[in-house]
Length: 358
Image (cartoon, rainbow, N blue to C red):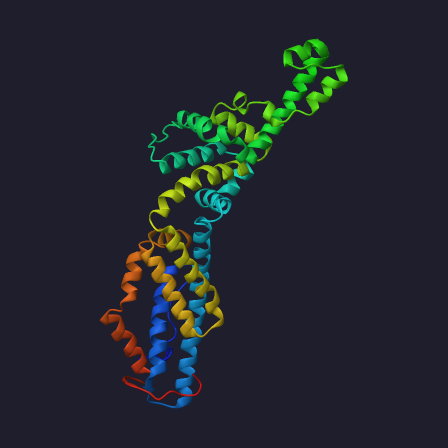
């Protein structure tokens, strides 16, 4: 055995892992956690300073890997909570739009904004239990459902949609300009008869036009299809706010109704608790950090949607099987790790007396 091999054996903390590879981080974390725990509780046949040095290296390497895993999980849990904001439909809607699309690309290029609106209405239909044919060849089947939604779910409570009201205000200005032109052409008396009003003079008629509100026009006269809605929102410059508003006012209640029956309130409460433990664990001991990470991984393991978030954020595949295999250390890996510990002087079979530096 050459000197390099001897050094590798002595450095039992030198476990391979990469920051870009979440699965390798998990494997390293479990190995280091096991070796750290064994080194802490097993008798060492050698100089105390050497044992202290090995133990400290295991501890620091474990903390380094654990810190990276912790930060990854914090971001995943934060995103999941944002996308399951039960008391804040607007936050839920914003997260929904950003999670499901490259919003920055659409904002920068202005391309396929119609497709984003279509996706929203498809999800709304799905949440209501309405199965629409999928789009194919650039052809959409959303228009009949859009018109139904527009007339039944939006128009009767248009005042609940402030972003749509902003579009109405733009149409109102056009409407006022049209009326002012009619007044100039017809004169205040004829104009007044047509509008069902009685004006004393032209100035009174202009003043009446100036005080008209959005309730004086029917948005259905301007928006009668999804195309015209998207065009209006794009021209008004608030298409992102409009689609978020539709997610919040239409999709969220339908989504919540489904998930409430499946215990989403209890699930979120548990995830919030785990998230709190995870964010505060960095200021604690290695044992507290290890416990918080293991609780978080177990919560993700038990929650299908959370596991998808972890996989999407880390590029991992089949994470459920990996977590299952890691949660119960097989005999082969345990023998290998024990051999590593034994090679540097730890008595695997004998617990030791607690020392002051731990």
